[in-house]
Image (cartoon, rainbow, N blue to C red; front, side, top):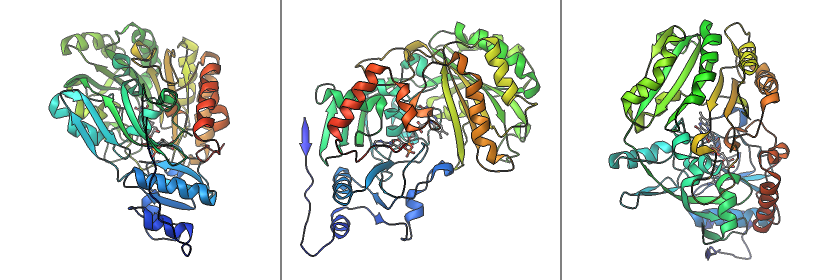
Length: 460
Ligand SMILES: Cc1cc2nc3c(=O)[nH]c(=O)nc-3n(C[C@H](O)[C@H](O)[C@H](O)COP(=O)(O)OP(=O)(O)OC[C@H]3O[C@@H](n4cnc5c(N)ncnc54)[C@H](O)[C@@H]3O)c2cc1C
């Protein structure tokens, strides 16, 4: 166990805030300061926080000083890297921003990467791709590596490699008591277990070390079908997807796209079905596996081919934002025909809906069990995962919360578990249901051991 305490300068004359400003090397900003809005800006405009203070950390000592200050003056502490996740932080919070800590170091021989709390997947891929290596990346490389991994890290490659959290070797974390700790399977194993999947209320991770997998290229991409073919495509997909080997990943999404000039002309302003596919083996085998789905409806755009791992973003084509996104999600034990019919009813071409995306993802394979040291990742054992997303803007924006939850409510008869990273719409009080009773109790125990005063407790 490595524990270091930051040195704090103190003087009788100066206030706690003066001391904080003198101690930290990054900016310390209140809402009245210019630069505050830029410092706190992030992807999801639906959840922009307005904390009492924001500390732009450059290193672990800055984080420790911010936590010490927050304890001293009675503020709670939140963390923000890219703002892709939800936030419930109110005006009684100090938010630590981590974007400046974006260093990436790759050891190609040991196949390890050590990255700072502010690094995005795009930063990491740029360093690993030249060695034919990759982390277990998500569908959008603008997402932060640490936030993604602590919430599990569900990759389009997940059926082949497991969750990103399964590949973590060690973490540097500043716990709410202000101590800087190196945490791994041997040192503080309970905290190591809890952080990898439990994410919140345990400390501020300042760097993460994880194993890389050997992968240069992937066969895959997207097939876009006309929205009118949604019933046939989804019916064929629900029967086809579970027959795939674990080297293959797939999801299917009903998209209601805006007339965005950045989109290919054939997609602008259209309702389409987007079938996503990845295969990490021989491209000819991948093409054979996908062939059955090519005939189930009219394809309006075909983006499938062999691609470098660095191009994986093109498989899901997630929005690059920023945008005010509302979502609702759940895991499913099965995907029977009535479940598909419910999705079509709420999100099909005929629906007058605020929804922009309803995605059904095939789970299983190596996602079902921890790969390596056990952790607290949620969503194990789901056969499928569904997320409904709607922008809280535009003429139907006010309907976004109702329309997203209507989809998941309709699928409730088949629900089992959920993935923390996609549980943005779930209130904290209900989030504990994502874990088994045993894991929930263990998480609560670890949280109260490391944060007895609730400095980092997440608000309901
Ligand atoms: C377009 C898009 C695509 C996505 N794709 C995927 C995907 O493919 N797979 C997947 O699993 N998830 C995905 N997500 C969800 C995403 O992984 C989570 O929202 C994740 O928490 C984002 O982390 P962040 O640091 O980028 O965002 P932030 O909003 O900055 O952080 C979100 C939360 O992460 C925690 N956190 C962040 N940094 C730290 C830290 N240093 N220490 C402790 N806690 C920290 C905090 O609880 C924070 O509130 C996606 C989200 C979006 C918007």
